[in-house]
Length: 228
Ligand SMILES: [Zn+2]
Ligand SMILES: [Zn+2]
Image (cartoon, rainbow, N blue to C red; front, side, top):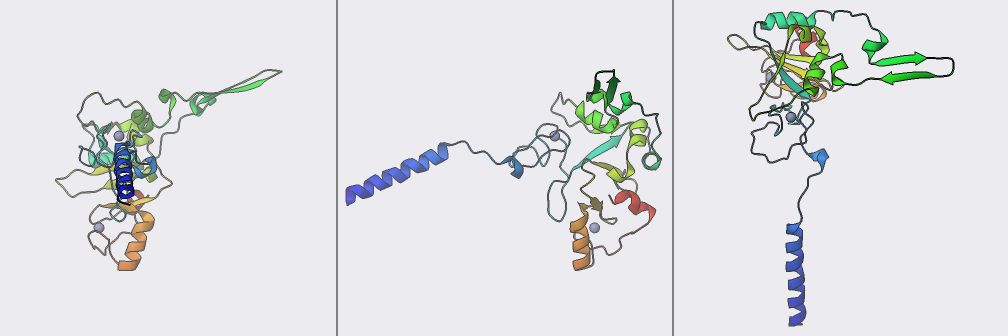
């Protein structure tokens, strides 16, 4: 009996060692993904709440604390906050769209028809996305996405979230990379949330879940830009 106990103890001890010796991998679905460079980040990192690859800070919802698909961008020097807002809201300049600019080339003959798709980053119509795809971080320092006037003008206003901080602070601009996922912000504390989470909290509690402000703009010009 005693020898059997020893055998079982030895077996349990050996099994415990074998379990610990296996490398542990989290499922990718559980890991926070950086929406700027598409890197899956480990849950425990030495960097403080930012991507280990490109150092872009994560933006969390202040209800669920999920990482939101927002990438903050900065303005080129010389562009004021108000000017940037006007450029974003201005209609996108219409360029004549040919097959070449749409990213494909069609050729026909008597016996065949071909369509050739071209998806090189240089041909991406959205300059912001092209900038993200061409990104290469050479150093350890965080390099923010900096946008020009032309890039601002090409942006779809419904994909931009603007935190309008009072002076002397500058505005913060975010681009929603998954426009189907609606994101909004509180006009009082500028915290960002999924629209559904935020509306549910406002309906249940009657105020913003973070700052408890009860004054939320609705249906005005500000909301058109800040609510995605
Ligand atoms: Zn990243
Ligand atoms: Zn708030």
